[in-house]
Image (cartoon, rainbow, N blue to C red; front, top):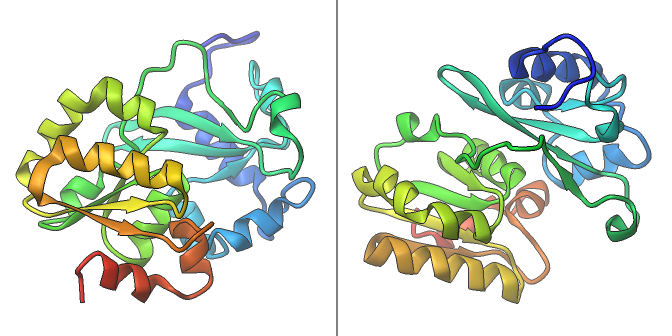
Length: 221
């Protein structure tokens, strides 16, 4: 990680940005709308996963000002942080929707799900979908894009060997279905796809109170 000041640990950054989120989830722009639309209005849930807001950037984080911070927590501490812009604008001309530190390696998001689930376990594309699914449906791992899965699948499929039933959540569009099918192919017959409604993802469906629909599609009812 590149920094312009004293070395600051990832754990310290996660804790500080969680504090900066504030008691009323005061995010820049329409960030509050993003949280509500993605079922992230429960302070206990937000604190559990240490979500935060980069209101006053620590050294080296100036480019993430105003972003939602999403720490990758493990039993040994935070091993990575993804930053997500929640301001509704053309991300293609404003530096992109996501950011991370240079050289940050790929990790499964929410690996603690492996210790909470006997079987089944879920896997979702996107950190927010994974944590919302974990809270509302079943313990769920997250991947930050199918390209990351493709590069790490040999390792991550080994991690899932202990589970005989894996629910692969698919966003409700062609890209989401294609990604879920790729994961399903690598995991084999134990993987079942739970498709979100058209234009929806796990978080938006839970925010709308439709988590039972996903439970049924996952074969959990």
